Length: 190
Image 1 (cartoon, helix red, strand yellow):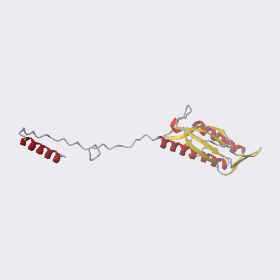
Image 2: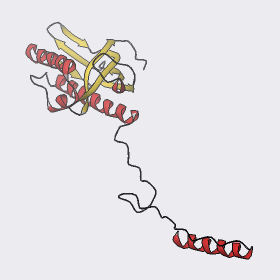
Image 3: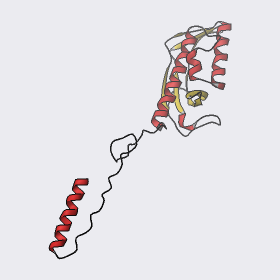
Image 4: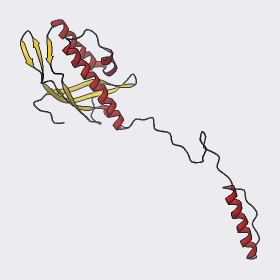
């Protein structure tokens, strides 16, 4: 850059002196200092630490699926007295309390669940919320337990299909399921 500036100044001086003008005084060419931490004058962008909506929805889905699969695994095993690390990592508050109440009751009464592991469909629904959740983390779900069976003192019952919203929020630095609002349905329409 300095060489180019010097050549331009000399060329301009020659042109002006040939035209009878006064040659310009040399000027100092300022070269930009390197960007801190870099070697060029072009600023380097740092990636945003704020996750995108797509990343948040993926994290919410991962937390929900991990919780749901662990809950259903514990049902197949006959219930549980205490939450497992997977339940604690992915669920909190009323949702975790409700599932644990269900699993403790199952274990105390002794009813069984057998058949195939339930499946779930998940669609992100950012913007929907209840009072205690993060609207960026809401999911619409369809939980299908129709290929599993519940046996209790009243007999053997086929599982159901339910659809609704699952609400999450950041707890201890990660998305956790804190509430769900689902209803039993014949077919799902997500």
